[in-house]
Image 1 (cartoon, rainbow, N blue to C red):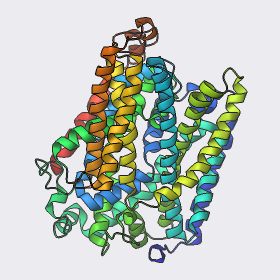
Image 2 (image 1 turned 180 degrees about the horizontal axis):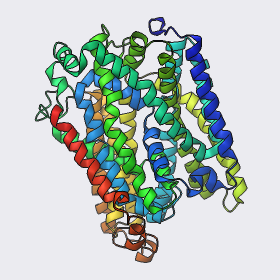
Image 3 (image 1 turned 180 degrees about the vertical axis):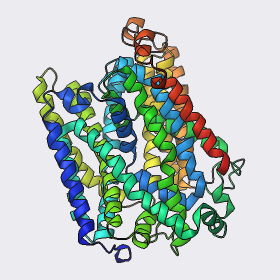
Image 4 (image 1 turned 45 degrees about the horizontal axis):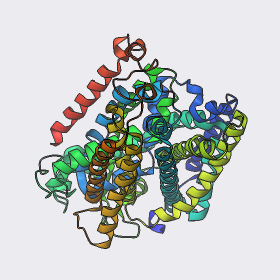
Length: 551
């Protein structure tokens, strides 16, 4: 890996050290505010909307986002923008306007707990366990990416990098719980931008601005197709190998709504908000930076494609995953380099902290308290939460070595999402809007949707099914899981009794409980510029407008 080694000076190490000390300092300060398990797992529901909104987007700016989207930018060109403008913003707005009133109003502490109240305990347990497994797998990806960066850029051995990265995340979450994670995510959001913007700016200057960049991309094998988003999506003859149906339904609807609306690592940020209005605005505030993140991910991917000779190798230093590290090596002077390394480290730590804080909450509330040790005092569950944090990080160290087996980590993650999130989203949507859906329909639609996606994935790996790319498989896998889960929900509900209406109040659309009534929801939105519907509409309109120049 010596080809990636950065020429790091004392000043760069100093910037990294100051960052590590600051992050742990935030953990110590947050610790003083923790007296109950609700403080540890949900920040005592006291956070303002701008803090939770930035934490919401920062929790998503992990390794997958920074390294994975730059890799996709180099590999698939501007079609990667679909992950943001059709594959994130509409779902984030939907979460804020439609789903947060149910989550926040029903006072649940986690997404699996919502499923227990809406369906039954088997549905709850299946989701809690699969979520916990998925979180430690994804934490491993973030940890592996962090270690890879430290190994490549600073020359630290892989195992040492993994242990140091894990130890710092562990330190600040065990100390300060979710508050510490959230405050650090707000800090990390700005550190990440400060680290990545210089790469884009210096890179664009080097290739002659945006026009120069596009001219050089046209001369590459990726060609003109890599500079359009929708123009060639009538068929599959485009860099992504996917038609508009796969993009809109597979990515834009199933994968993205499945991820943003049911992924507890994200929803947890909004649950910690101080009131219903702040909770609803959380994902919508996050949608505005999300529109612009491609400037520091997709654009650097294209810059790497045209400036790094031989990028796109199967293995070695020139894989697509290394697009951003290679640019840092080639473009940045010392000092700026220290900020960029710190920004990358911050992004992986933010991603991993989101996974670990999601894992410890679901493990403690939804597995341990629900099935192992009921009715103990609050201090007991606070201790369990801290132990679960340690366990989650240790398992993450193990799963980091699984992630090492994939050459594009984004593909690994999309495969995980199509297995876990797509059937969950289908179960949620039908259960939230159709009160007739029975308790057992929830369990069977989750399980069979998961198995449908797994069958497709294993068939693809075994050669029984063929797709144009790994990503196309995950779009179809997600679509299959969704359709199967919806069909099963209707079929099982036809033969099993529904839950009584009084048990569904505040959990199903049209059956408002005392906390989800129209008055409660609208009370915080009297000021026009704080209205989630208005803010959400602006975000979606901007996403459509952004597509026009790169249609």
